[in-house]
Amino acid sequence: MNEQFLHSDLTQTIIGTFYEVYNELGHGFLESVYERSLAIALRANGFEVFEQVDIPVHFRGDQVGDFVADLLVNGRVLLELKAAKAIY
Image (cartoon, rainbow, N blue to C red; front, side):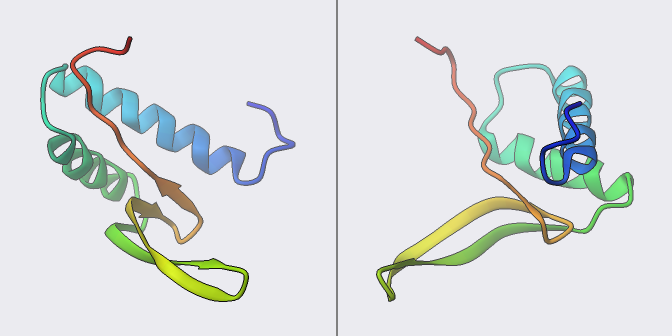
């Protein structure tokens, strides 16, 4: 992994955990199934994980809305999961 990236050790472990979850579950489930399963697996690996985290979005000093992140890991890495039947 390239050490010049911020939190590269953490993100490398998150990606590895994602593959563990996917290899165990396989394909075809809704995003919510993968999200919950990944949260369980990350917590089992000792990470602090929050699900469906509200993050205020600001534009030029004004709050213009909220973004809901799927997962927040160790207060540092946001995960936005996507599940699709196919990628075109």
